Amino acid sequence: PMVSWLFYLGGFLEPFLHSVRWPAVILGHLVLGVWYLILKDSISLEKYRTWIWLVLFSPLLGFGSIIITPDLPVVFFWSLSLALALKALNTKALHFYALLGAALGLGFCAKYHIVLFIPCLLLYIFAENKWKEIRWNGVLSTIVTGLIFCLPVILWNVQNGFASFEFQLKHGLEKSSYNIEWTTSYIIGQILLLFPLMFWAALRAHTPKDLRWMYYFGWGPILFFLLTSFRASTEANWPIVGYPAVLALALF
Image (cartoon, rainbow, N blue to C red; front, side, top):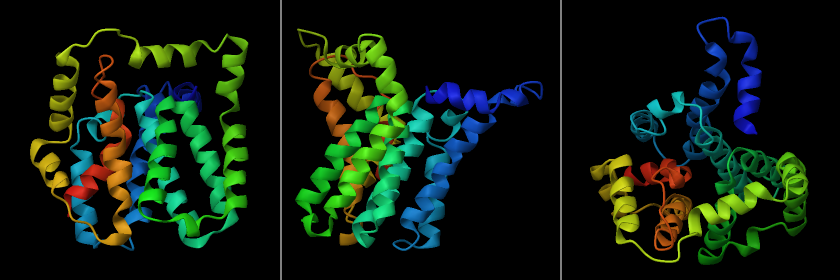
C-alpha cells in the first residue's frame, strides 16, 4: 500500500504538471539525508560527497527514483531502519528500538523484502559479537511497534487468504528445475547496476571496525538473492536495499 499512500499525499498536486509524484521522489532523495546521519561520524565529508554522486548516478537509486515503484520507499525505510538499529545498539535507548519497529513495519507496507533486514542484523550481531549491546526489553518494543505499523498488510492478507504472501513466496522459489541463466543473468545484472568498477572496489574494501555492518547490510541481500537464483528466476532489482551500503563500501 505504500506506493498508493504516496500518490494519495500528492493527489492535490495532480493539476500542476502531474506533480503527484513529488512526495515519492522527495522520499527517495531523503535516503541521502538518512545516510548522512549514518556516516557523518565515520567518514569525511569528501567521502560522503563521493558516495552521493555514486548514488545519484546509480540507475535504480538515482534516476530510477523518478519511477514510483515499491523499491523507492523500501530503500528509504531500510536505510532508516539501519540508522535506528545502529543508534539502538550504541545508545541502548528504548525509543530507538520502538522507532526501529515502526520503520520496519512501514517498510513491510512498501515491499516484503524488508524482512531481510532481520537476518542481516542478526548475522551482524552474532558475527561481530554485539550481543552485550542489546537491550532485550527494547527488542520487545521493536516487535510490538513493527506489528502495529505493518497491520494494514497483515489485515489485508487475513481477509484475502494470505494471497500476497503466497504469491511472493512462489514468485521467487517456484521452479522445480534449474536454469543456469537465472544465476548468470543475476550476477551480470548486479555488476552492471552497481557499475563494474564500483562492484570490484566494494569487493576489495577494507573498512574500519565500526563500519563492518556495511558488509552485512550491503552484500547480505545480494547474496540472499544469489542463492534464490538457483531455485527460480531472480529479478536484478530485488537486492536494491543493499546498494547504498555496497556503494559506501566502494569508498574504502
